[in-house]
Length: 503
Image 1 (cartoon, helix red, strand yellow):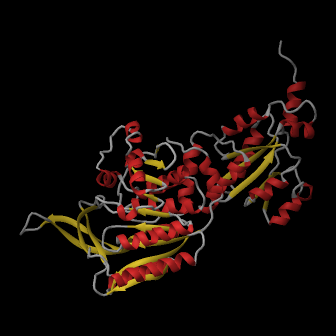
Image 2 (cartoon, helix red, strand yellow; image 1 turned 180 degrees about the vertical axis):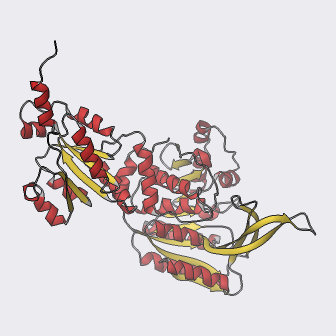
Image 3 (cartoon, one colour; image 1 turned 30 degrees about the vertical axis):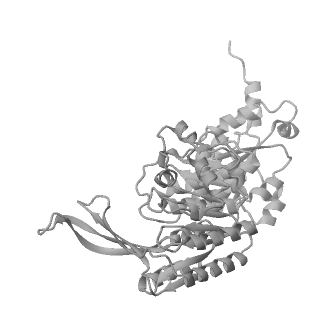
């Protein structure tokens, strides 16, 4: 399993809601589902017996939805027709919390609609049979162009720190004049402008943007360079560097399917950022998700490397679902945490733990916390931790360091050093995370972690618990588990000490 390098976890710990403005081709994706069980008697084509229709915003509208799923405050700037499809796009985007005041109605052109026919044959998984595109590729008029420029400028003025996303599908909205005016404004004001380019030969309209995010075939078409199949050759192909040099970009990100993404910064060496192998099912919306995730990461101050890792994770989740569906931040966060856990066992620093617990919380998990010396692990410990884990979804165990154990138990303890104790506890399936600490109490840990449940052994009375004041202050759910007489490390050690030696 590919594991992204750890700075992304620290970047995720600082992740906050952000603002974005989306300019581009707003579309409606319409999918007609049905059964395709027989061929037509008058032509060698399957018959689709229509059963239901799904309509979702696509293109730039899907980018807006993806940004919303990633906690973005989104303003939409584009064109729709004076038709039912255009009204449906606006209605759905507004229902999801997008600001659609920048969507202009142009009665002289239809709303772009991509209508897919999806058939289910012999009760198996659905397959796309055909697609019908309803669209105009005429460039928008000078009047509409001026109106969009004004709308985008107003949206950027109203959201300091926003990032500008351009989603170009070559449907006539992203004219060279409009894009160059917007890019010039971004350069003047320090706003980052990220572009998902159209599949066109000439990229001059994107000159001086912050970055472009073409896929493999789009980059080949725009540069005239073939992308090699060998990963090392991809990195050294000069493909992304050619984009930066021609367009005066800060960075270029070329998405490469199973090979991940090629990142080139203006002043750096090319980096091939790997991705996790997927059973790719449907690539619809993957490019939109990449643009949205990159924008979200950059708006949160991620470095380019971590931004591409974040986008890779989001796009990887996108291709595993059918159709264009936004991936929530919590799901991307948990995916990155899952990758990182592959090589790092259960032991965490406090900062690392807080990042991972934030992902669990965002996914609705109930966090359980307990602490102790756990010296000479025995059946009582195992039963206690198993019961604690049953009180929630994630169990965090804080373990006293060696100096802390000596202060509590005397100079002859612990029997096992902290690394040994953590190794043993790490083998228990009921334990999810381990944290070593040397403070006399876990007051500070409770305040930082804020678990849903705080668990202590039944040999304590509530008022005897050193942290009872913090429990009350934070309103924690305190649980005292049943005591197991005779099963304590001190008793076990004493029994071993006094046991008669065998001849």
